[in-house]
Amino acid sequence: MCVETLKLDQYDYIQSAGGLMAIHGKNQILNDYNRQIVSAIRSENERCYIGRISFYGKEKQDVIAGRRSIYTTYVGQYICDFSYDFCVPNQDKPLEEMIQQWNRGGSANLLIWIINRIDSIGGYHMVWTKDTDKERAANANTQI
Image (cartoon, rainbow, N blue to C red):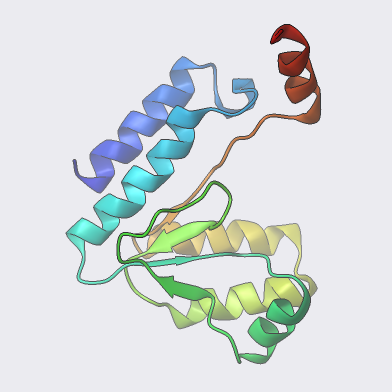
């Protein structure tokens, strides 16, 4: 299936659930859409890169200093929930600079610009879902 079709299917799925804020707990269908869209981007392009926006500890310092790339080449490996935030068909210097700035302590507006940049270069920003502590506790109490 092509990227645009998958994105539209995902959008329709989210809307049928009442919107993103109406989806509570881990939703494997939504999480699997992320993986399918990344795979489709890879199928439609010569290359494909997955990456994160926020880094921590030594990784964060290395990203800020330019010693570590924000990109990981996607070659079909399994993507665990929450392990990556975006996928792009090509490495993009302006995106990398924005993410470096974000990790220096950028504003919420910068995060919006990062997401817009990802979209404008033909990429995809992932939305993951998970159970909350309350939902996990409720599920544990009902499974006897």
